[in-house]
Amino acid sequence: MTVGRIALLALALAACKDPAIPDRAGVYAFADTVIIGVDTSVTLFRWPTSRLPVRFWADPRSNMRFLLERAVTVWQDQFLYGELRGVVVTDSSAADVIVSWADSVPPDVPPDTTSASNACSGVTTFDYDTTGFALSGPVHVSLSVLGGSPATPGQVQACMRRVAIHEMGHSLGLLRHSQFDEDIMFGSPLVDYPSRFDRRSVEVLYHSQPTVQPPPP
Amino acid sequence: MTGGRADGRMGGTAMLVACVALTIWPSAHLAAQVSLHVALGPRYSSTLVHDSIRTAFDLRPALAPAFLVSVRNELRPGWSADVTLDVAPSRMRRHESSGSFDAGSFTAVAFTVGMRRQFAPGVSARAGVGGLRYLADQTGVFREGSGGIFPLGTVAATYAAPFPFAQKHQLEVEARYDIHQFITPALRTEGFSASRPVHRVAILVRVGWGKS
Image (cartoon, rainbow over all chains, first blue to last red; front, side, top):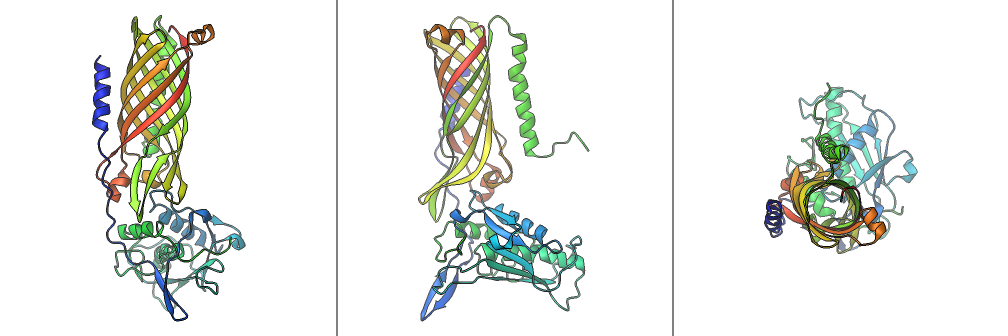
């Protein structure tokens, strides 16, 4: 019968060989180095699968929660295979990453994306225990408005969106900066979203063996 | 504005509704040779994606239930044609050397047309063709969409026990195999240039209504 022949033909056509695995060129150095005594060790940190979802806490002032949720979603979306999940929690004592304003709190206004103004900055801090191979507490991220900047509130908000993603990248384990300004992990991020090299780098990171353990839950 | 196609999920839902309508509609006009069948059973699926980042790993659906609705029309003694809607929700697992990890979920919806032939009393075989679509949130391998409808080929072997109870309820046990090619836009973006054959096997228990 015709349908039977078509089915057999479809089965035969479908039984092809496996597709080639893509190479992931362009991964930048994301591991850091630390000097312990007289030794220099590679510091490679990522949140292990057993600690997912990573728990983030957002400063309740202004639109920090929005910035944080957006940044976490952007990084989650970089992964194909569920390597990372994050959730924003309301209790800072139960958080793995604490994100707060450093000093002044910018107003929650629509972002002005007409210029890539450097109107803000961020810092991510890891507290290591005495061995240097484990974190002793939550990762701290602070975002700040650059003093003396002529940027408008809208430009500050556009900057905060970029810098929030950049600092979340650090908190996930991209400890070093990219040397290329097309990447969100460039020292002073100019782009709005992770590049394909950011994506490849964080993918490789989350399939690498860490040398630093997360803080106690 | 209403009536627009909001996203891929809506398209999948529309297709699902259409398939259900096409499958169920004939049951309202059950002619002398037409029967309705419902089947349920576990399904195994082979690897969707084989990748290697530092180490090799597979993305594979977990063992999951499959639910099938068929409308069968007897053409002549020993031969019948059918249309079948096949719905299978499943979680995905990432299998690597250090363990197996959750990687999201999807529902696979397939619609097939097939021919069935009886070879011996209670023993029949079916071959069919159709299309399969993955319905999923736009995350992970589905973050840029599901990849549309994949052509699907299927074969099955069915046994109907010769007991009065089984005959009354048209009770059948079926081993069903199907194959389709899988790739998504996100995998293409990642650098995969070709699709991968996905094999699925289900063991089903079926009951029917109407003329067998």
